[in-house]
Amino acid sequence: MSNDLVKRLAWSGLLAGIGALSTIVANRIAAAIWVRVFNEDPPE
Image (cartoon, rainbow, N blue to C red; front, side):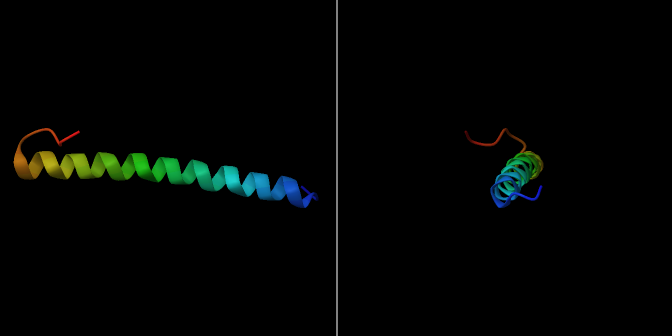
């Protein structure tokens, strides 16, 4: 990991992975809240 380019690529991959995971989690939480409030599936 002494190469700066490898570190930047690793950081970009980590950031993209965490961003994708947080988006999925946020979407599931929002959908669960929507179902509880309106008793129907969220709009697509």
